[in-house]
Image 1 (cartoon, rainbow, N blue to C red):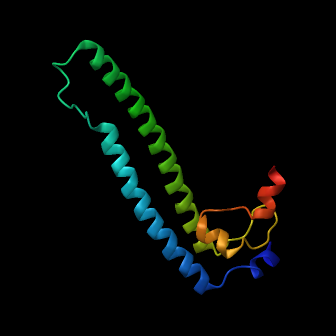
Image 2 (cartoon, rainbow, N blue to C red):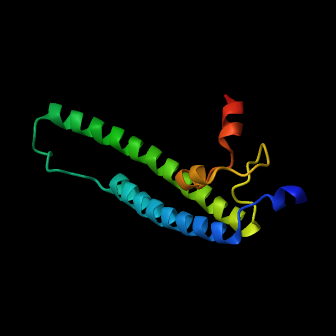
Amino acid sequence: MAEDLKNRYSDADLEKFKTLILEKIEKAQHDLELIRSAYMNDHNNGTEDTSPTFKAFDEGSAVMSKESNSQLAIRQEKFIRDLTNALIRIENKTYGICRVTGKLINKKRLELVPHATLSIEAKNMQK
């Protein structure tokens, strides 16, 4: 394990990744609040006096929308949790090290998926 730690990103690189992750967390939390507000909002568009058939379709659509928003919220919470775990790895100076191969994960991959814990090589081995 000590040998793996020699093979790590520099403190300057880790600081750049930390900044990127903090920005992504901020945006993700904002998006989560939007999803939650959409989920909690009644969205009553004044259909109470329209035909019963339309109202049934509208209610069915609202239920599907709430289910969809609920799933989006769950995914967003997991994304935030994964990003937060990446910050912990930065503090531990283990960020960017593949948990399967022990090699550094490509910088481009980490820029696109900053919470990645597997290199492309390890991901391909899973398939």
